[in-house]
Image 1 (cartoon, helix red, strand yellow):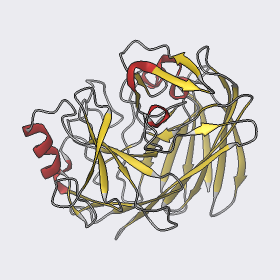
Image 2 (image 1 turned 45 degrees about the horizontal axis):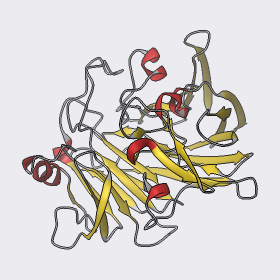
Image 3 (image 1 turned 180 degrees about the vertical axis):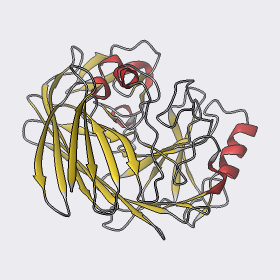
Length: 338
């Protein structure tokens, strides 16, 4: 595979991998972010900022790896080892690691392998936060082969602490962020969903049977989004956690476009996924040369439930000196032409 490195600024570096079939994947060292996934049919199926400086501040978190906790922590308060910790947040509920999120950090980058059929790129960062116990060594590896991306998280910590990382890529399998997801269908191996309140904090767990949240069989996404909007919910679409029925080596999520016939399968070691359907797009220019439309893309945020540290119904994402954190996300693309 061909690797091209580019210094966007003195601090922002971009790495682009081009395969023999002209698949193009671009990553930057800010947040170890995925900024492009161009298929051999010349469709960029992920959203990326046109202005790279937008990766340095809170926003839509396009393609970033968020942490030390993905999603919202209720009232920005947690407890670790019996000690109450108030997290530094500009918002009532701590979101995606706050202003000190991993998403905005500058990672060191190394190319660990480059062969004809696979590239391994390692992003590493020594992270600390004034409110969280511990000094963290965070390593994020991208394993890139034709038609797939595997993301591997390895985190060690000097103290018992919170750790719940995910990748926040926005997918549209048609490469068209000017239209909604009407052409997309979704399948999730989950018999339950966590409903959210008006602060988009997960609360009631319900069986998905006979509800708009039943994605156990492949079905269109937009009717569920429209139902949520008609109810007047603040989420304005899907922003819900689906705990998987079981841990599995098979695909837990499948996203499909009826237009391009492309299919994205997601494999993971995580216990569930937050589905987010671009409910609150920003007026920031994408690489495509336009701003994203509401509901034009979907995030498949596999993770622990966001507020699990405060909700004993769920397993929380934690790290300790004796128990390093290791989780994987595997995106596999298929279709008539990759």
